[in-house]
Amino acid sequence: MARSDRAIPEEDIGLRQAAHAYVIALYRELTEENGAPMPGTQNQVVDFILADPERRRCVAAWAATAAVEEATTAPPQLLPQDTFYVEVRTLIERIMAPPVFETPGTAAP
Image 1 (cartoon, one colour):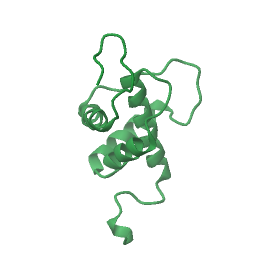
Image 2 (cartoon, helix red, strand yellow):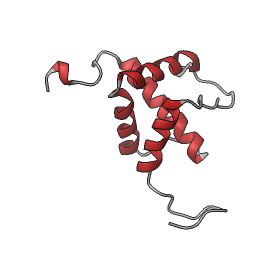
Image 3 (cartoon, helix red, strand yellow):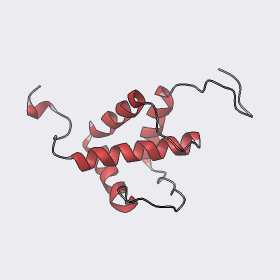
Image 4 (spheres, helix red, strand yellow):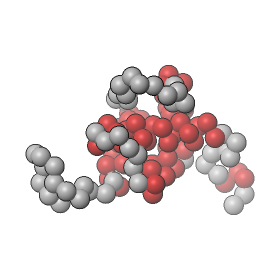
């Protein structure tokens, strides 16, 4: 693959880390679990974010205010409910595996 064919320059590791942090934060909001999505799901969503210049700008702006590399004991902040959030949430909900067990108030798959 030629260097110009890549969606994001290899050197921009910070943006890739920010995209991973955003996906994990969104997953935590959706599932109310303290974890991350399965690697395949996580990587698909990160690639989706990094494939578009506007989504890259959105995740970079979020990362600048979210201190993604800082450890904290504070409760997690909710993600901004904007168009970017809706696009990424729609994708992650579509590709996330359904829960194995029924949770209260939901039907079994």
